[in-house]
Amino acid sequence: MSTWIENLAGAAVEVVIFGVAAGILYRVWRGASFLPQRKTLLPFNRGVVLQGERVVKVLEPGTHWISPTQSVISVDVRPRPFQTQQRELVTADHRGLVIRFNGEYKVVDPAMFILASTDGHAAFRLALEREISRATAESNRGEILDATVSPAERVRERIEPSACALGIALSHFEVSDLIPIDWSLRSSEG
Image (cartoon, rainbow, N blue to C red; front, side, top):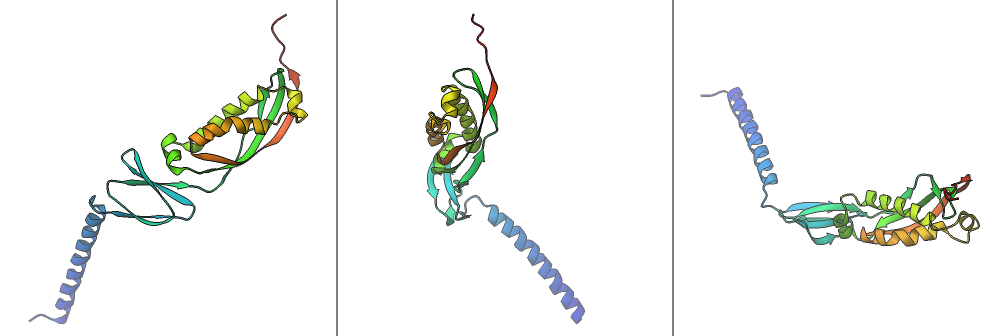
C-alpha cells in the first residue's frame, strides 16, 4: 500500500510529463505547414498577400486567415513626412542656389509598393533627389528667386510619375529653404 506522499509525488510527475508533452505538441502543431495562420492588421496597415512572387490580394485592417502557401507583408499607409537635405545646386544660368524641400507622402497602392522595389521609401527619396537637381538646372536663378518659376511645382511634376510607379502619392510638397549663393561658374570658353 502506498502513502499519500507517494501518490502526490506520482501525480506531480504525471503533471510534469503531461506539460512537457503538451508543449511539444503545441510547437509541432504551430509549426505545421499544412495549417492556416492567423494574421492581424492594425488600422493603419494593409497586408499584401503573396503566393511565391505573385500578388494574390491586398487585405484591409482586421484579422485574416492565411493559407500556408501564402505570405503576408504589412504596409504602413499613414502619411509620412520628409525633408530633403540642404543642397547647393547650379541653375541654368550657372549661378549657385541652396535649396531644401519638405513635404508628405503616403502609400496608396500597397501591392505596387511591394513589387516595385525592395525598399520603396529609399527608392522614392533617391528619385526625389535626382529630380531636384534636374529641375533646378532647367531654370535661371532670377526666375526662381522672383517666384516666376516655382521649384516645388517643377520638382513635383517631375517626381509624380516615379512616385506613382512606386505606389506612392505626394500630398504636400514645398520649398522650405531657398538661399542664393554669391558665386557663379565661369565658362571655360572665351
